[in-house]
Length: 540
Image 1 (cartoon, rainbow, N blue to C red):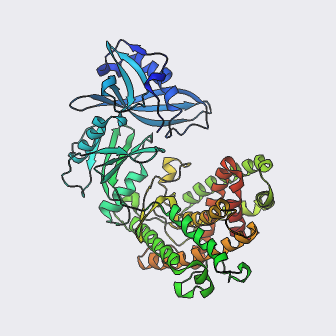
Image 2 (image 1 turned 90 degrees about the horizontal axis):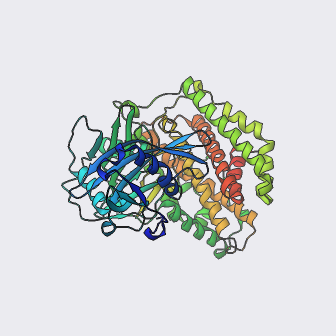
Image 3 (image 1 turned 180 degrees about the horizontal axis):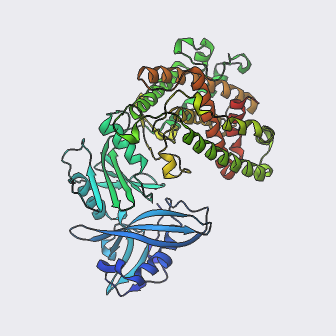
């Protein structure tokens, strides 16, 4: 958490208005949104505008919510940027006397009317956290309310016992209640129901999908222009960390085996990309190197992924989740999106060549030489040849979105791709886009292991890359075999072999091009990973 000590402020803001009427006072709203908030918000972890220049903040709406002891406000902010775009944020606000503070993280010292105290983010006050929980678990259907609390069908009579923050604050703030539930408060908000709320509630309440945390409640704001999701409460799943951490540990062991078992990398049997493999078809040399248990875990992950997609694609009543076919509108949307993103990445790479060296530079030049080939692949999407169906998907599926629970996996965070608009996140897409996202995550885990342990493995980097590419193809082959068999037996229409290969290649390329922009901007040395991915997908 970013902490701001109460004693570091040089001045106190004084207002004539009382706290109970402050948002009806023009002067308070003006000073609060400019002088007070601008300094506070730019340092918060959940603030997504750090790369842009803040122009001004406007309070666009607010609501009041009271406990037995205190009055709180939920404030909706519009943050405007000099680059001519804006973002919306949710800020729960409290006014506390010094002796009532539960935190040293304060927004500003203020005088409201004749009372001195502090403006604080209300989530830092236990009284407010209890208020939210009580409202969810005691909620009833009351039409016409602006602030709507909802209780999930799986939650029994539950009394508030405790609350604490979950880990570091990220793009949202998560609170653990009674060591049994997690309430995620969405900081960045959209005038549309959040996909995480929609999908979580649909999967667990309607489709009874077991391998995602159960939906237990939510907080939504009903406005004339649409619903805004402020909070999503789910069961707290006991876990041993995420699948990214698990995979890094596993792959480290696999690379350790090269030396320990005196394995000759040149002698490892290679396979074609997307070759589907049953466990008993994996060559003994590969089993000896990698071990059987990791392949079994990949099978389980593939099974859970297919089950998630079957659940997301098997409803015929709720239009938001009804499967649909490909059409010209989708193709126009897809091509425009892909060509815009591709051009953006070309511009970034042209401006970043000076940051690259060695293999990254060599691959970047190859990418530039083959840009027409890559662009043509994006343009070649012909919807008339697609016989499969599109469904609502996870949209940002990777190892970090999966929890390890014993020998099993739980899938979470259905918010979608951070760079996408809220509308784009709800577009029905090929389920194989999620599969491609997971494959790119496998690729990353392999290369991250090599990059992070340079001194540990006594091999040249190129040799390790070669072993890594072979390992990757086996991961993909085992995952695909299980996924396709389960998806097709569950009547999920993902197409036949030719279409599956085309869609996978298309979606893998899309993901790798997306990653390229991120790596070039934040850690150019790692641009090798998406560049190598693009090269192996396109075979240039």
